[in-house]
Image 1 (tube, rainbow, N blue to C red):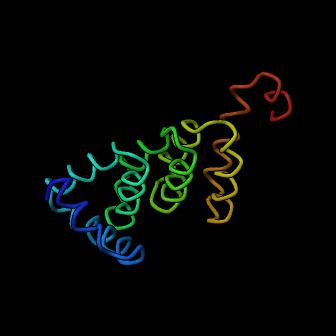
Image 2: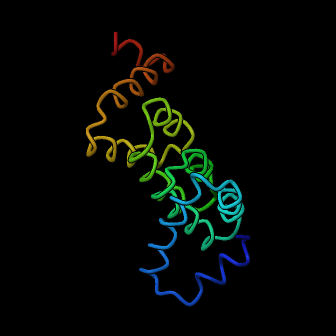
Length: 141
């Protein structure tokens, strides 16, 4: 399925049905490289297309696509990607995500990690921050 066909297929659907369809397409993309490529093209599109590609990650759990969205120019896209990486990312991916996002969003990300009880990630991030910041290093040791 190419990008144009995918968008045409989704166009007549209601929002709820469109989101369900994207999750299903995400699941299918795990085994279908052509469909995964189409989703990567979708992620390069406008805001609407980026949102659709991120919705597919609920089915595919495609961490690469989620990480790519962490550096999007849209704050809303970055926020959606943060929610997904908290759900599907391992500790290293979460640390990389924390370091990749703008400073203003880090406190929100840390709150999400706290809600999901990802304490080891929070502690590791704060330790790395303390080591990298001379002023904090004195308080941490």
